[in-house]
Image (tube, rainbow, N blue to C red; front, side, top):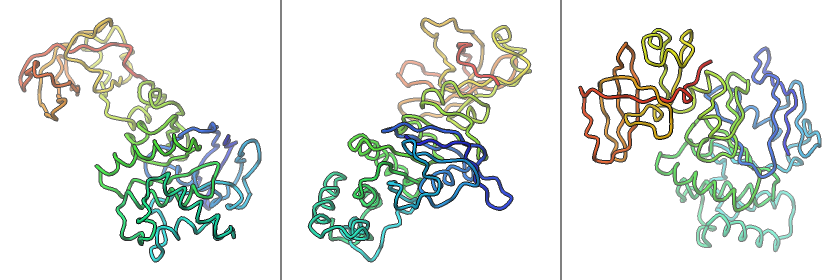
Length: 335
């Protein structure tokens, strides 16, 4: 549906995006993920039409839209700040785009009420000022304002970043449900790895204007393609080459370079059905989280590993305890 072909974006001498080639399928929830300043918002803005690439093409269903006017692209945009009109009520905010298009008054009323119902905005909320609404309700107004124009694509630029942690979790679930309900192709920009993993059908991980990896959340997390992706996505252990040479892993990995393994794949229990390597260690520290505990392990031969263990009430591990650590060599990443 959306194709970026050799897209380059420059601001003066600064090369913000370099040779971007990317294809997004119809109906996908596709996330641009990366740290601040990596180019992900710049790419989104080039898709919507706020920024013109210095080179390359952007195609929508095979049609070149690189230099097409913003209003003719059929893309709805939800900004980080929502960009709602504070002096207008909810109804007028949602109706704004339809009025610009000079739609009939009866059609506007029908469309506004219909989309409001679909995003769970009640009748009485339509005539409140947006400043009277909660952050979550304002987000729904911003999405309704974008969707009422029936865009083929919905673009969202960090729409949850200004909310508290509990509301972010609640609203990302609502966002995913809305996307499924409408079946609309959604491009989502975030620096939050957890958001990307829970919301996305596929993720593009960006670093300094370059795509490091494109894949499903499972692929990006478990089969990280580069050292940057490996370190950026989730918590991970780094095992130095010298530690590897002094460990039971020395025959299973390349000891000439560092190894990485996700915290939860370091186990204090045998791994059923897996040819695991056993490594002796000692618990140096423990953090209890209720459902699980995090342990820092001092490993025989040097180095530390972190692990996460589900709390069953049976383990009873505490600082100073000697433990057996089980690692499957297939879970180790090296670059």
